[in-house]
Length: 98
Image (cartoon, rainbow, N blue to C red; front, top):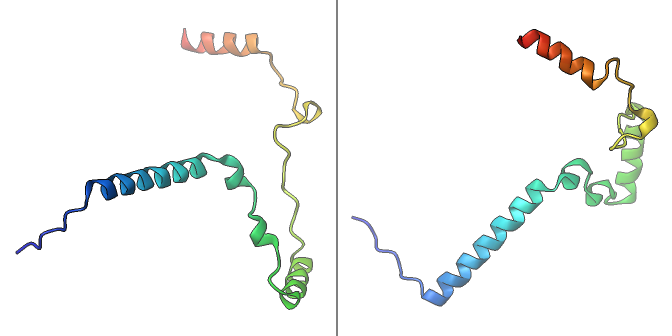
């Protein structure tokens, strides 16, 4: 036998609906925010205590991570010069299709 649900007053239902819409919009906005996905959180880089900081610095010095960070968008001098121009590429594709 199913238990009956309590009826929620209309005003409370409206408020809860607005809150859920707001949370959904914030979650979507956060998901679509590329910068939050690419940059590490500031709270993660801040050490909790001096002993933790010294331990972390020792670990970092042992590992010596490679710097693989790339500035985006690339500077004009960092962009490779294409071997073919656009017209050449279109001509090759057209020949392959026809």
